[in-house]
Image 1 (tube, rainbow, N blue to C red):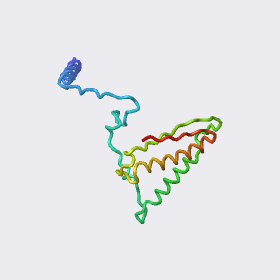
Image 2: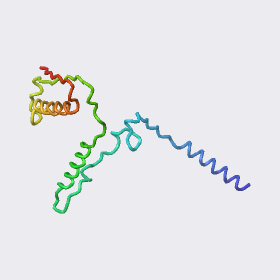
Image 3: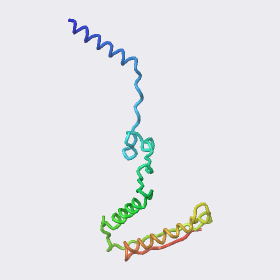
Image 4: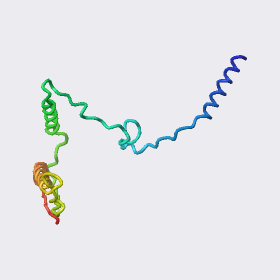
Length: 141
């Protein structure tokens, strides 16, 4: 009988503790693509400090690390992940914004020259992957 009374005391004490505690509101979980490691949103996680990962060699240079990263990038670029379908004739229109806003000098070089250099790279890559396709280039003012 003594053990029964001890059990009752424990049960009563547990009930009183539960009554006194306030339950914290549950954190809403967003879509699975926006979840971070902690279960919340990605932007609620702590920032990753990529500069802590960088290591210097004996001379204090990071050239070896940079060359290693460049080599990895070249390997990924040269790796044929998905073969291109060269038999399909694609037609694409590339529209370039040539308004006055693009000539602002907030960035060096200005926006227009950067856009043109990226467009040249895009055209070269497009014809490498689609040799029998058509590409039209238009400009807006």
